[in-house]
Length: 458
Image (cartoon, rainbow, N blue to C red; front, side, top):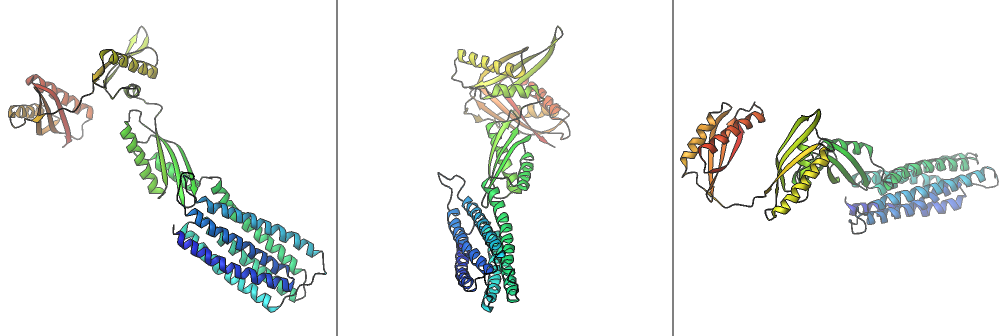
């Protein structure tokens, strides 16, 4: 936001308003016209209101600090609400005086030409001020400038009403002056309601419904999100803040959860640019997969780095359905056997708590591998390369084996084979084929410790 421009506009408006206020007070006292005095009072209040706008823009320009984490932009809304109270006070005072004058015929009201000229000029100036302030409020997203523009727009109507009242007074209708004041009061009251509504909404953190629904839909549609559980939105000046809670898969890693959160932020930026978003990722409460529930329960055990090779066997035991779960978990290699056994007990207890009683759990603890130093020996072992290529092509769903890498670590070899498979078959079927190839490779080359087959679609 160009706060310098906002201050220049507020300063200009303040100077013009001061000039009009002084002139109207002088003419109102000279003519004893309640309509003109109401206009003068309105302009005097405008001086205070525009002064507050000037102060508000300066305060709102301050960045967030240790005491104001969301910045100072609400200063503009506070000033706009103050203007609402001032306009309400004007309306009440004008109504009281107008009613008093309706019952008093002794008050003489003059309507000289210069008073009429003043009101015409005031209406023209108010129109220009309202137009410029409203344009600036849209460009700068300033509620304080918007409030000032609405105030000046109301002043156009009050000036015209006062003008008509004086014209009627010149024609001999003395009652027109207090009646005109009552009409002016109605205008001021309407302006007060219009000014106050948005300010109260922002000060009370009322959520902008259209943007809230757009953000909810964007969060729910982000990749990896199974549910958008809670979205809270608050508006401060031209800045929107969103607090979003989403649910994702229970086995997602911390890194994956971070990626999901970033995806939510990108989707929200697409529908509400510039929004300051905080995303909290929670695990989805239910899962149709027992294996996934086992992985989630075992993974949340302190000390577990990875869970794999999870198997869940369901069987009937004398008419009772029971489950037998086996799994492998990796932990720090420095653990003693006793510590590893305690960790296995904790894992098994977590899984039983997740799946319920009647479940047997057997956990195997493995050391988490450290970085191993090896060397590539692919060129010196062409026999292994040819053997793997031939074994891969024996599987009808494997179309070729176009790269083989052989790495030696100590006395053990590790093999990585890149194969192309039919793109229309299921992953389970291709995995079964890879499992058969791996077993054949290990049987033919006992010096190989591990085999990894990397799939690529044809």
